[in-house]
Amino acid sequence: MDGSLTISAAVVMFIMYIIFDMMLRKKKNQSMKKTFFEIKLITNNRHKLFLTIDLLLLAALIFSYFYYFQTYPELAFLPLFTFLVVSMVLRGIEEWLYKREEKEYEHYWLGAVFFLAIISLITPGAFTG
Figure (tube, rainbow, N blue to C red):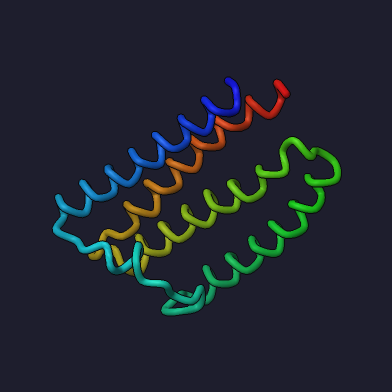
C-alpha cells in the first residue's frame, strides 16, 4: 500500500470511528462532553493503581521511542500507537471496574480497536519502503 492510500484509509477509519462513537452515544443517550471535548488532567478522579500504571507506560513510551528511533527508524511510530492502545484499554478497564454504570469504558475500548486497526494498516507499509 503506498503512502497516499495508507493516509486515505487512516482518514476513512478515523471518520468511521467518530461515526460509531457518536452512534453509540446517541443510542445510550450520552453527551460527548465528558470524554471528547472536556480536557482533563491525567490525575483527575483516577484510581492510584491505574494512574501509576499510566505513568509507567509513559516512561516506557519515552524510552522505547528513543530505542526504536535509533534501531528501527521505519517503526518509530509503533511505540506511540502501542501506548495509545494499552492506555485506552487500561482506562476502559478502570472505568469498567469503578464507574460501570456510566458505560464510558465502551468508548475507550472502541478507541483502542481503532488504534489497533491503524497499527495493522501502517505497519506493513513500513517494511515495503
